[in-house]
Image 1 (cartoon, rainbow, N blue to C red):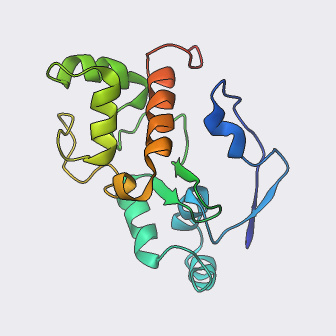
Image 2 (tube, rainbow, N blue to C red):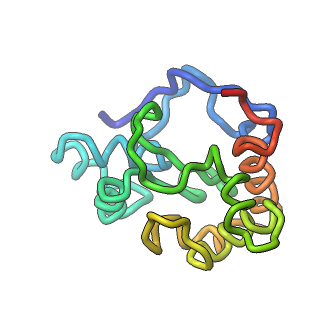
Length: 170
């Protein structure tokens, strides 16, 4: 279990997906958010063996098990961030529903437009916490790790896929 395979890819109209590895790619289990999710739920011996070479610490796996998702910034490729969670069909709630981020902005943003609300949520995730979730649920370091251009692209992606048009129809 030192590698993982890309077996499916959901196409996107947005440029953020251009860095996605193609179906059939073989990737290491030592970097990236998907690797963290898989190792967090893997056999303990396999996980410990791979952690010696991993770009993330063992504490990251405990966090994945606790919060239900993993985030990665520049672990596999410089300038690339990713978020992964097991079982996309799950009804479990580990964080606010990003499919409803535009509606949440209208509900909670106190006069800000959706883009400003989302940008602030990335740069200062505890400035406002969606009711029902504790502070610290969302990644706390994206504001420092992502460039303004990357944050802008992420905001556009979340608006398009989160109820603001341009995303995959449900």
